[in-house]
Length: 227
Image (cartoon, rainbow, N blue to C red; front, side, top):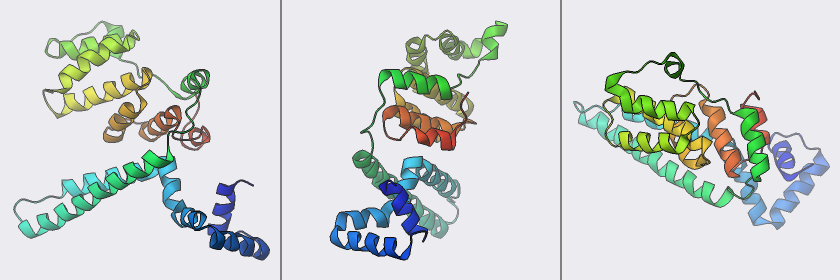
């Protein structure tokens, strides 16, 4: 039984009396281990990518409720947003110290990528359709479909500086995230997926962390379906 399984059994009261006594004696002897046990539920959420999604949803809900016509309510909302920002910064610090130590080999990365990633299809490319007002975006999509990801990224990053509207911004971030993922810029891809609305959002975030070495491959089995 590994340490994670032992901690989970302890926290869920599934140890025998003798095992529990031995476990608690070990915590008394090792303050760092005791701290790990106390923080384990949070660290587990971090490891599964769930805490980041929860914080993102809380942030979106808080900012959506800001009301300039009611200063008192807005003040409360701003305070909540500030606390959420502080939580995100704390989470980033946790990630810095606890992640990135087990990045898979190039061969393993390719194996995982093939097994769990499905490239989105731009149907307009195959129908030969183009919208003149979105020509540059369409060119980026075409480069993406042709696996010329660097050219696609160059166009998308230029357009991202001055999007024509909210819909185009979301589409730019969507394709940038998938481009970044395909060229190994996993943490940049993850940031885009976190703020986007991709149907496979949770799986893609976990995939980015596994390929970065921030999560064990087993996290994919829990959050994704292999192709």
